[in-house]
Amino acid sequence: MKYDVADITLAVSGKQKIDWVKSYMPLLRRLEDEFAESKPFNNIKVSLSVHLEAKTAYLCKVLASGGADMSVTGSNVLSTQDDVAAALASEGMKVYAKYNASKDEYFKHIEMALENKPHIIIDDGGDLINLLYNKRRDLMENLIGGCEETTTGIIRLRAMEAEGVLENPMVAVNDAYCKHMFDNRYGTGQSVWDGINRTTNLITAGKNVVIAGYGWCGRGIAMRAKGLGAKVIVTEIDSIKAVEAVMDGYEVMKMENAAKVGDIFITVTGCDRIITKEHMEKMKDGAILCNAGHFDAEIDMMGIEALAVEMKERRKNIMGYKMQDGRWLNVLAEGRLVNLASGDGHPAEIMDMSFALQALGAEYLVKNKGKLGNNVLGVPKEIDLRVAKMKLESWGMEIDSLTPHQIEYLASWNV
Image (cartoon, rainbow, N blue to C red; front, top):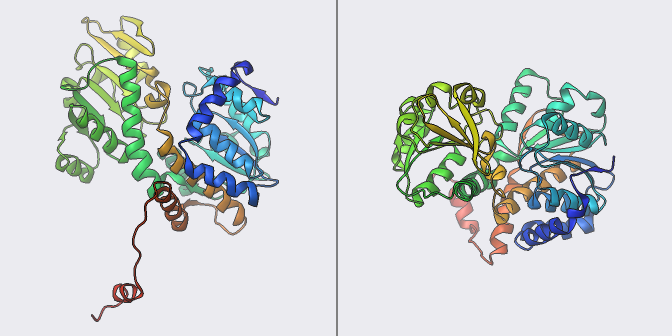
């Protein structure tokens, strides 16, 4: 099939969204022009599984401008925007994605996106790689390598690397400085609260916000919660990160204690069962639970359903669970990634940097075909620095550089 989207007639709305974000993504516009001239992806098939909304769509168009034969799907059933999928399909791209697809349909779309026998994969969470290695190894014959967008996917890749089963190089885009310092912190910090606030229509000021995990994403969410007037509580398993959270002005406690006082709970760990039945039994009436990790595993959804004596949609994208004692607990977006399942994801200017890393990472793999090991690679420093420099240039800013004397001084010990 050339495409499998919900409604191809939605394309006009999707194109409007793509044009809007393009106007705020100067790095990708610059790469689009460069790729259109140099054609680094001529005769290269790319399979992409990333949250399929306007910013991702523009990345697809940038890669296509460089000659890539694109095959596209989403990476979460609630983050696909049907009009954006239709817009790409209407322009001749292979697109397989629908909003609120069933689990079977979602994985069928992942498989369809791989059936072009890709040279490059661009993954967000690891579902492409996982299916390729576990079910469709017959589609691996052209594979040069791939890029992974997020922490959860890199965790899976490093597990594969540790077991010695990874057979191609994978660029850990998430670990680039320009990704985790800006996308994970400022992008997640803003987009998570966009999703929560537009979905609940409740005030944040004065509430106890419990954030599980104080990595770069957790830092960003906490910073924005504090700016909105919340009292922030952090739960952690890493004592160093916990110390940092305290020094940043937040309270730190175990989840079993935070469960008693929290008004809003946000999980952002990339791990499994962070909020369990035991925690839910201690929560306040009206508590709001949401997840900002990639997979819907951090909140024990089976557990809350087992505890509930009644379930009902209390507001669009908010499912209420009535406990035996009459308390209502509220889960946003089915426990899925709240900033995309309840919002539009990260701001365009942030994804401009992250997707520039993806595009340049893919180009790096093609240029170095056969020269890289079968392991998880960091983004080359020169690519990271190039993205940062392009970002400064887009703002019309310049920075200093070392003089020859300063270079000599820094390289000397006997001064």
